Length: 271
Image 1 (cartoon, rainbow, N blue to C red):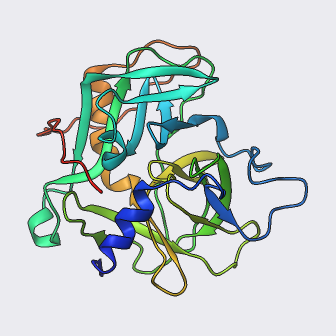
Image 2 (image 1 turned 90 degrees about the horizontal axis):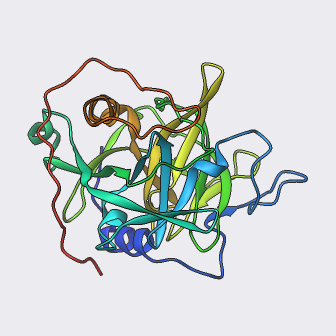
């Protein structure tokens, strides 16, 4: 399955923010939990940061994951935590590659996911392990689309993974739909791009996906997430190779080393 239709809608909602709406549209907020405050389930609320005009996820050691189109929204990318801006180290920023068999998958060589290191680590934030989406996996979505907020949803499937073909960088993805099947069900909106989809796995919260796009033409509406498990080997290898910035409670992510062909490039401005 390839997600090719409605690309204009996908780009529009991925890049625009709406100051009059929650970042993650919530159908039925859990009692005592407003969508603009941290969820009671313990999902890593503080690790999702304002990134340029959208969102990013701090995974530890000074490293941040976001959508490539969010990273390229600003010539001097930054994240904000506790009203402090942390600038990206442009020499440590990487557009992640799609799988080695990307031609047969119909994907571009580079994905719409960027890993970059900040010039300074952010104190006090935990390291977030990388997870894997499975069919019907429950996720908590956190993003900054017009105001930091959260919502819950389920991964659709099988099949779990699909291809998303932009006019530029494609990516492997999983999808959730907006059918109010979960409590506090959420649907991403513009400005949530680069935000996180977290799953409780193995006794702790893990990052399963990065929010990249929303399709409001389909019924029910869809939120599209870059699948972190597709890119986790690259992510961990870059961190092992380039190193983390020392910070309290930082942990080293481990994985077998891979040979990578990674480069930074500046994409054209999207409208």
